[in-house]
Length: 145
Image 1 (spheres, helix red, strand yellow):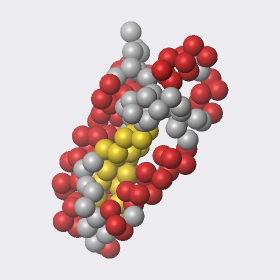
Image 2 (tube, one colour):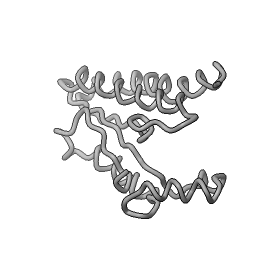
Image 3 (tube, helix red, strand yellow):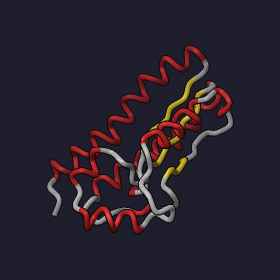
């Protein structure tokens, strides 16, 4: 029952936004023969969540885009990967009902929400010079979802 506008808004932001940003980043990275691209995706890409077909599709699209990009730019010293955060303690949770919070938390084997700094660590790790052989991967930071 989703409107076309709702569908397009999420795809434009998450998928088209990733395409446009990486397109311009790659140009600069190719000149330097070095670079790191990290998209922030979601477990929704693999699991899907009811009522969020647009979000799940956009995040799955990001993974496909990243994997194609990883193959295209690897020989130029550029890697492309994704970080897939699970449920994270952010202001977003303030707008979620206690019932929904409990159901989300029940899915996490570690029994807690992630912290923003845990997601940041994953991005930093993929951007490190030592991560030269990590390419075309999805790093899940989900507490085991």
